[in-house]
Image 1 (cartoon, one colour):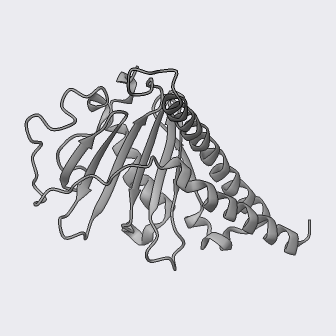
Image 2 (image 1 turned 135 degrees about the horizontal axis):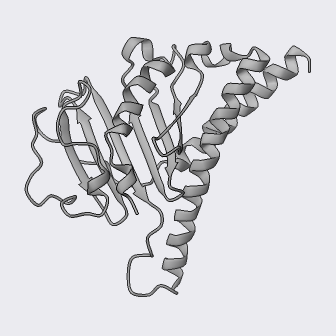
Length: 225
């Protein structure tokens, strides 16, 4: 393949990734932030006793990020870390895609749409991880890493202690507003997402890997059914 076709392939793959990436983010309201960086978990908040609570990272400062807040819904849990002034911000979301549809009518149209959306979320997450891995390998093999800002900004693939693959992607060095993310499908059922606009050590993929992956290791994912 000549260089112009190689470059076109890389651009098309990048466009595909950008088009698919948002589908792996569950649609939900943003979690409210606490007023101070030393926020304590209130007694009886929406995550207390929730089935996902046991898998969440701790409600205390973690890897230099103060705990701010957490919020749980029917099938998801979100925990927010950072500073109230916005100078640090990191969001962890865990979504259970294996629950029955909410409500008594499990055969109705609303239930069918809910289950279809959850199945799509599982499939899209798994595909995104695979596409990010393919993008990394293709860029290294074809010499097109410059399209990402250099090799240090290529997607990185890691895994949970159970072996579930995790993909870390970061914006290029010239993208000052973009967010870095970690995404993965846990036990074929739970969608894990982490996002942050912060750019430690230049915002390279390895720098965000060193932030995101240790947080995932603080989560008791093995306790999920």
